[in-house]
Length: 192
Image (tube, rainbow, N blue to C red):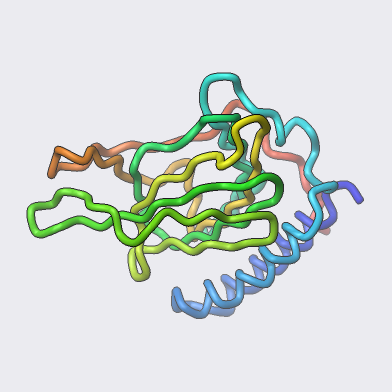
């Protein structure tokens, strides 16, 4: 199987982002592309499934040369989670292996973040959406106490070089950051 499912997703997303210009159209079109990509995890090389003992891993799988989208593998070891953060662009998160917990937040009139709704758990095949238009602030954690969880993320930009924010519950001012990626090179894809 190799990287063929990823290559197919890249081709489909390239066509989609060239054709669609509104966020709702792109999200609607990208959802079945991600759904197909997370049907089977055998295409993802084991190097991109490797957890770190201390913190989650964010491996770049593909970044569109025009920064219209990126595809990333996130690997969560037991007990690992993100801080409260945003994305500033649309994104789809599909669970490939394991399970993930997600808690959404929104900022109140004072600028402080407050939980919205209850924590949700996503399992293989489940897809969640984030964007400034539908809710963009959340935390994500591995839902499993004794094994890694892996998700595939598609973002409407090169997320590793996008300016974003971390939120502290007791601070109104967010902290700016750019995540970058863990130091594993993106796979070389022959898209011809």
